Image (tube, rainbow, N blue to C red; front, side, top):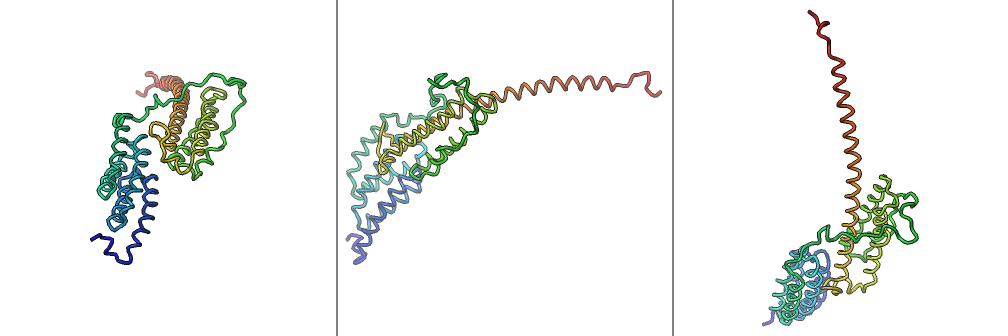
Length: 298
């Protein structure tokens, strides 16, 4: 006897609960919880339970969402979402056992594509590889060497994007970091007298052009597909946005590191001057205070 029959007249509630469970499953796997084992396992367990209780149809849309989940998580920086992916694979096995046997075929070919794209051999981009291309020393119509003194960097559009709910949480965190780091870099460069330098131009371009353009391009994507539909090499619009913002963060960090070295040289030079100046004074002072032997108390 079907377990759903045990509920009798209340069996229809299982079907209604299954509809809500699908929404819960989608919200979980395509949110930051989708990177965790517990989050994916919990949502999958609800689907499996309702399928056993009589809503056998529920495993089919859930299995389709799993394919989108694997496509959005496995082809980017999959190591960050590894616990969630493991839970997703276990859920796929359970869903196939409960009736979604068709899932094995797209899952198999997706696995082949993942392996062909690098799979376990993929590594995170190193700062050297992620460095922004070198900018020209001068932009037509703008003299970098005679630029007007820079004012403190305003928050601009980056601050607004940090509060924009249309953007993924991880992208908003990157934009908040960009907002802080670019403002810090511009203040440092101004304090070191590097107004109009290539480093200042790069930092302003990241703050006022490169980052906002990346965000605007993402916001032009359909909301229902931006985080799930692959656009290039299995990566979704969300994955591409996060990757581009990471590139910009690496570029600004290079500017900060260079500013640190420049400021550090001034500090080291001043330290050498102080040691030379006061070390000699201390020696001379000791000589002046030495009591002659002929005046010592007999």
